Every structure is written in C-alpha cells, then in structure tokens.
Length: 391
Ligand SMILES: Cc1ncc(COP(=O)(O)O)c(C=O)c1O
Image 1 (cartoon, protein in one colour):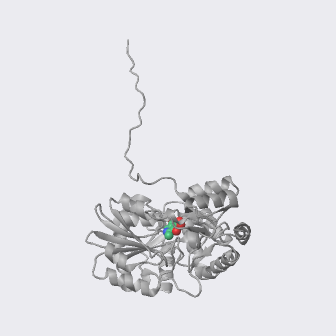
Image 2: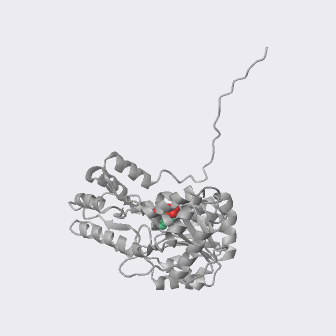
Image 3: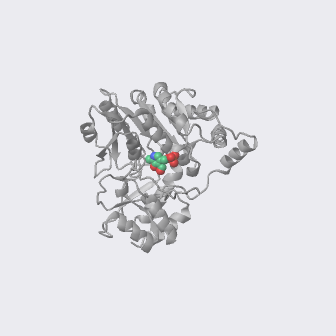
C-alpha cells in the first residue's frame, strides 16, 4: 500500500522590496469620494474626454491592422513628431532614431531611467514634495533618495540646500516643472542655478516635464532640453496622457543624448519592450493634423481662474498657481485638523475630495495645505465650488 503524505500548502515569507509603500492616499481619497458621492478633485486626471479625432485615428490604425509589436523604441512617425516638437519649442534637435523613446507613460520612463542609470549604493537627490513614484524607483535601483525640502514659504527650489545635499555618491537629481503638487513653474534663472550646481559634477538630471503645456500668465515652460549644457546630461520626460487628456492610455516619451538613451533602451526592452501600437499611430496622426498642444495653457488657465475666483470669498488661502492643473490652498482659517484628517472631513462632510500635501513629503509635515485638481468640467468645478465657498 502506498502511503500518501499530506503537506500543508505554504506561502513563503518574503521580505518586501518596498516595505514603506502602502495604498496611496490618491486611491484612498478616490474610494472615499465614491463612497460619499463627493466631487472628486483629488486624483489628477480630467473628467472630460479627449478629442474624438484622436479616437478616430486610433480606431483607424486598429482597423488597418496596426496591432502587432511596434519597433522597440516606438513607431517612427511618433518619434519624428516628438523630435520635431521639442526642436520647435525648445530648440534642441534629438535624433528620432537614437535619442527618442516612447514609454508606457512618464511613470515607466522614470523607473526605467532610474534602473538604467543609477547603481546600488548611489544617491539620488529629489526635491520634497515630489511625485510619489520617484523614491520607490530609487529604492528599487538599490540607491538612496536624498530628499531636499523646497523653500517652505515660496515652495520654490532651495539651491543652497540642494548643493549641501550633493556629494561624491550623488548620481542624479530628479526635478519637475511645472510642479506637482505646488503648481510652481521654474524660471530661466532657476534652471541656470541648477546648471551652475551641476557643472563641476557628473551628476545626471532627470527632468520630469509632464505638465510642460500648462503654464499660465504668459510664462514659458523652462525645459532642460532648452539648455545645451543641461540637455547633455539630461533625460527629459513627458506624457501624452496629460497633454491630450488621455491619462488612461499611459503613453509618454523620453528624450536624451544617444549614450544615455542607449542605456535607457537596454532596460526599456526588458521592462515593457514596446508601447501599444495603435495608440502610437493615432497620436502621431493627431499631431500630424497640426493639432499641437499650444492652446492647452489657455484652456487650463481659464479653469484655474474659474476655480480661484470661486474660492476667493471662502476662508481658503490660495497659493500661487503658475502651471500644472493643481491648486494648493491653506485651510488654517477653517480648521486646525492635520491635513489628512481635514481631507477626510472635506470628502465625507462637505462633499469634495482633495489630497493632503503631506502625502508628497517624506517627513509628512503638519502644514495646513491641501491640493485640488482643476482638470475638470466647468460643471464639476461649479458643483465643488458651491460646497467649498461656504467654508
Ligand atoms: C509630476 C508627474 N510626473 C509623472 C506623472 C505620471 O505620468 P504618466 O501618467 O504619463 O505616467 C504624473 C502624473 O500624475 C505627475 O504628476
């Protein structure tokens, strides 16, 4: 007789690669907003649709059978369109064959760039507050994130503090303009200050410019690609999701000098290999229709002004909003709650969801600051303002 042995199935215990990461506050607030029927000005995405023409182009590409793997760095017409746009707006010529790669959104671009260029034991400087994917990307590369707070009063980069944080192990610095969450847009002088700082070093620059087409009051986007010295050491990232109101498509791009791009692509090809084909053709054709993003700043500036004027009579104090689609406000005239509690209260009791600024910081400072997203239909903004204006 054969004896059968019985073993309990056992799930191995694993040490987390990202022990500090949990459910993000963005998901928490969106779920809470849905549960309480609140107007969701928390998570940063438009609640209106993209151009039907863009959808038609993607549809046509699918119908034409453009549904198989594209070339690893992206389809040629889209890479050419990206290179032409960067040359037109910022004056640098990136070669579409060797210096432009289409990515699955800027988030993949950031992770891929960090994994490709940062080594275990390196340090990477980030400006606090920052987009929440930077630090986990650095940790996955086995490196250390050195978080340098922005000036607390102005929310602008503090270059003396950045200089103090840089040392022999610094491999890269990640910057973001227009900035999420603060809405600050770098000036040409600030870009120059960064160039001065990096000049005597071999530090790489990762420049996150996903809100490049949303700059207000006559400002210009200050791209690292427009500064020859910085561009020579930079990976510049952008996102079609932000520019064409298609955040769910997750298509973005990266431009960098050929030697940096060669390393980027080594990781990209085993990370995603390619980005979906019909979306790439659709975007290329949409751009070829001469539909540029030039009108986007005016489009969002009007929404910003609508939102700001609606809050003007409330006790919220409006911080400057120079670009992006985020408006930060101070609420200490309304409540002394910590910002995450205040956001929960705002969602459940007032019916408007927002994001606490502490979520973007390492040490979660208890400042009375929250972020609203105004990339919403006018009626959505009006519904939110009706509730907020009473406060
Ligand atoms: C500063 C910043 N960088 C990158 C991204 C991600 O862009 P994508 O959706 O293309 O991955 C976001 C999205 O919120 C962002 O705010």
